[in-house]
Image (cartoon, rainbow, N blue to C red):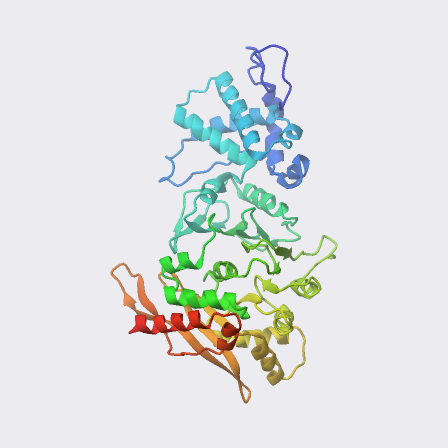
Length: 497
C-alpha cells in the first residue's frame, strides 16, 4: 500500500529480502531523516491539511512507573528501524488512510523490518518499539503517553529535558525528554498548524488547541531562553457536570442547585477566578442548564468550550498573517455576534476592551450571556471590568461605566484554587445596584475554611449568608423556579446549622 511492492512474495511495502540488500536501501536516505525531522511543518503540508508530519525518533525516557528504563541499544535499534521505515513509506498513500488504518500499516511494516534485520528483541520490547514509532509518525512523540492519561491536568515542558505534570493538584517532574530543542519545536509546530496558526522566530508566541479542546500555549526562542516552553491545559475526556463538582467538594449540593437555577433563569453571569481555578470548567457546567432550543454563540481566542447543546455556533479569533494583516480580534467576534440572532452570547475569556461589547450585549436583550475574567474576588472583578473598558479608549465618566456594569451583570461566581491544589467555588455574589458612586453587591453563598487535616488538605464548607429572597427572585418567578430557589436556600441554611 505504501511503497514499491515487488512481484514476488518476499517483498512487502518496498522491503527487499535479498541477502545483499536486507533494508540497505534505507542507508541512502538515512541522512534525510534528520532533515525531515527539522521540517515538520513542511512535511505536514505534504501529507494533507490537518495531518501530522513524520519526524525522527526521540530519545526519550518515559515515567519509570509506566515503563522500565530503556537502554542505549534500544534507542540505536529504534533509529535503524525508523530510518528503514522512512525509506519504505509512501506519504501520499499514508495521507489517504484514517489514523487507525495508518497505525496498523506502520505496525505491519515495522514488524517486517524487525524480522528482516533480525533484531534480538523480546515481545515486550518489540511492542514498546512499535508503539513509540507509531507515536512519532502519527502522534506527538514523547507527549503521547501523557496525553493518554486522564488524571493529568497540566503538562508543562520547559525545554527539551524538563517535563512536568500536574496530578491531583500537585506538580511533579517526569522522566520524559525530547531528543533536542528542535524536535520539541517541531512538535509544537505540528500542534499549532492543525488550527491554522504558526510558531517560529518571527512569531514566537502562540495560543492553540488540541483536537479534544485542550488549551495549548507555546513560547519559542528567542523569547524562551532555555528552549521552547510548551504548556498544555488538558481537558478530561468526559465532560464534567455540576453533580460531579459536588462529589469533588467544589460546591455543596444546595449551592449547585442555586447555580442550576441561575443558568436556567437566564441571569447574566461573570465567572471570576485566578489562573487554573477552574473557570472554563465551571462555565461548561453552567451551559449544561441552558434550554436545548436556545441559540448559543461562543467567542474564544482558542476554542475550548465543550457545550452540550444542539444549537451552538463556535467562533474563534484569528492572528495576523506574515504581512501583519487579516487579524480578527475578540471585539470583532462579539460585535458580529449581535448580527447572528443570538439568544445567549458566551465569551470564553474576557481580557480587554471586548468586555464593553459583552456588557452591551447583556444589556440589549441577550439575557443569560456569560463570560470569564481573571480576578481574585467579586469586588476585584468589578474593578477589572472598569479598567478593561478604560483600556479600550472610552472616555466615559466612572459613574456611567459602573451603571453599565450594574445594568448588565446579575451574578458573579468566584472560583479559587486553594493552597492544597483543590478547586472551590468560594462566592456566589449578586450585583444589585448602586449607592452613590459605589456598586452594591450581596453574597448568597460563601466558602468558609475551617482548618486542614493531617495530609494538609484544606477543610471547609459552603454556607448561606441568610439571604432569603435574592435580587433575581422575580426573574426566577418569571421562569417558574421561585419555589425551587426557596427550597435550595432553605436547605443551605439548615445544612449550615
